[in-house]
Amino acid sequence: MTKKDKSWNYCGNYRYKLQKLFGWTIKGCEVCGDKNNEDVYIQTEERKYFLQKDIVLKNDTIIKAGWRWTRHGCISLYGHKECLIKARKGVTK
Image (cartoon, rainbow, N blue to C red; front, side, top):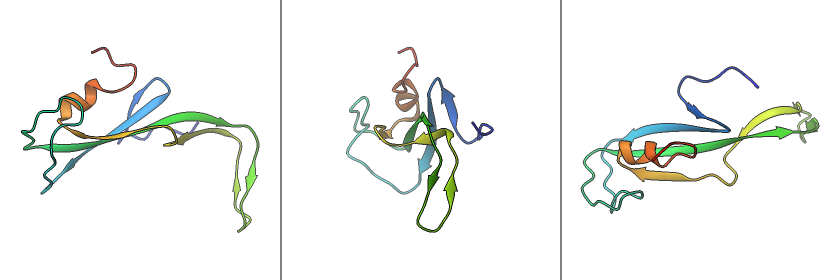
């Protein structure tokens, strides 16, 4: 596994990135349902997986076997910063 990227928050086999969205209005927080969203954030989730063998792409690029991150089977949510942090896997509610 490569070094931890400081723009992500790590939680077990998952990592999360929070980004504030400026000038966005949404119908409500996807976690709590509250319609008052002055500060809107998006949270991106990725999970760790193990690539068992090297993959050679059409352009001859080789992706080496080992630990990788994917968004497959993960979710992205919009809402309040505090709600999004509580919605992370492995975080006590």
